[in-house]
Length: 100
Image (cartoon, rainbow, N blue to C red):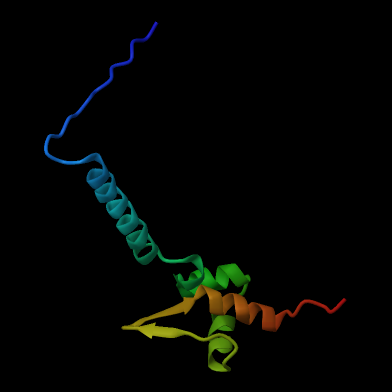
């Protein structure tokens, strides 16, 4: 049979309500930071290879689509990136769902 050890910490001079409010503030701030730090899936940046694989096309085809404006590309230094949400929107315009 396992014995469970309970650890008790006492802080003198601080009211419980004040301590709870401090923890709540820290928790709220952590939640805010997670929203900022963790990129949302729709705003994620993709490489040329990732986009080509996602769309099941070749890199030259992707290049042609960028040239004719089908898909928007962004240059960051000497690298080309694509916004995932824009790639998905372009995919819908290329293959529109049939009207029922």
